[in-house]
Each structure stands twice: as C-alpha cells, then as structure tokens.
Length: 148
Image (cartoon, rainbow, N blue to C red):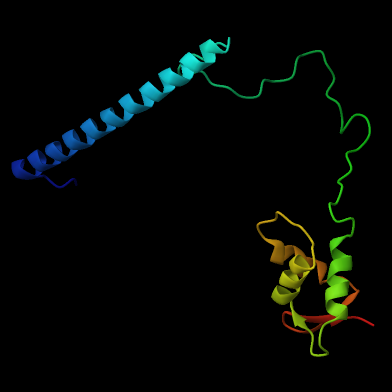
C-alpha cells in the first residue's frame, strides 16, 4: 500500500521538481542554440540539415539482390609497423631474462620498451595469451622462461 504524504512533503517535492524543470529547460535552450548554429554551418556548406528526431542508421538490403557470403576480392592484409610479430619480441625479451624467469607484466612492459607498438587497451592480456605458446615454459603462476 502506498504511503500517504503530508501536504508539506508534497509542497517540498513540487518545489524540487519545479527547480529541476527550469534547469532542464535552460539546458535544452542551450542545446537548441548549438544545434541551430550547426544547422547554419551545414546550410552554408551546401548541405541539408536533418529533421529533428530523424533516425539515421542502416537500411535493409534491397530485395532481389543475393546476399554475398564473405568478402569479395582480395582479403585485407594487416601490415605490422615494426615488421616483426609479437611472439618474436617476447622471445627476444625472454632470451635476455634471468634464469628465475619474468612475470608476464614485466614481459609486456619490456616488449613495449623494445619497440613493439600496440594500441590495445589490454596489451598485458595479449602478451599473457602469447606466453601460453609451446615456445615458453611456465615456472609458476605468472612467471615464464623461454622453453629450450
């Protein structure tokens, strides 16, 4: 059963919502002014501004055209800026590692210092996955050496 509010509580809530409403209306006015300025720039460049509320997105494929399976033409090749794969960098780093091994975190930072460029947000995860290769031996949790 809903709790019945007193008149004082209702007045307080009404005052709060009125304040919030005026703040939202001010934000909307600023956004509308910015949008109008952008529309003017689009018109000046010879474009057509979109109608407010128009939804942009992907359109469905046309009827009658068969859907193509996979890529058409030559597959795209990824070019590495350094010319050497990550596994080679990891091998080089672990070849210089002490006999007690290196932690995966330290391997990742050493690979970056040796010149491997990556824009990954989780580069440590990529290096840790690379260390699961048979080329490397796990000594204990998170510590690896080069398998000989």
